[in-house]
Amino acid sequence: MVNTDYKIEAIGYLLNEDCILKGFYPLIPYCNILVENLMQRGCRRKSDAVKCTDEELLQAGLPDMGMVALFRRFLVMYDPKAQKMREIASVSETPEEAEAFKELYLLPGVKSTRARLYMQAGFATLEEVAGMMPECLIAACQQTIDREGLNLKAPLMKEARTHIAVARAFTDAPED
Image 1 (cartoon, rainbow, N blue to C red):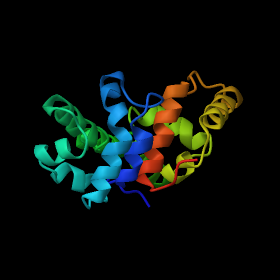
Image 2 (tube, one colour):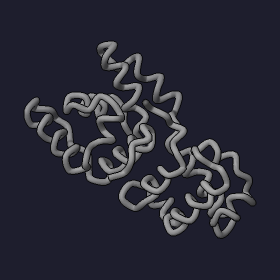
Image 3 (cartoon, helix red, strand yellow):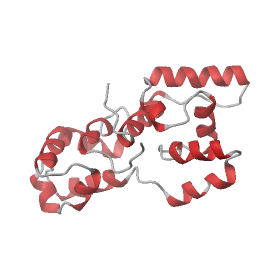
């Protein structure tokens, strides 16, 4: 089941150099203590952390208001964008494709071309993406590109890692 209000523990695998934008790297050293302290404060989901006051986030392990503001931006960066989701009706060719796109469009940067490639490679749900190793996801996409003669590129390693991490967060799948 897809849940964009991910568990606090998911911050641990979303907030790392393998899959986060460089602008959020300053938060990485605070990740573990922040997750631990937020959980001790009763925060179980992202929505709980969003409701924390600035003072509570400082007490949870962030060093200053700059980091609090950065953390707040991090918390909402994977929220679904309404305009992106509205595109699905105009680009999907079948009802099945539209259903798959509703999940795959939740991945950062994914639109119709990447979603269709993932589907053709055998990944129509976030749960299927979450269960992959980055190398296998990339290889499956490359095999599909080669087999179908598509003029596309397989995802880069960081893109694959990001998509897998977000898929794991949104499906509450554990990290390997």
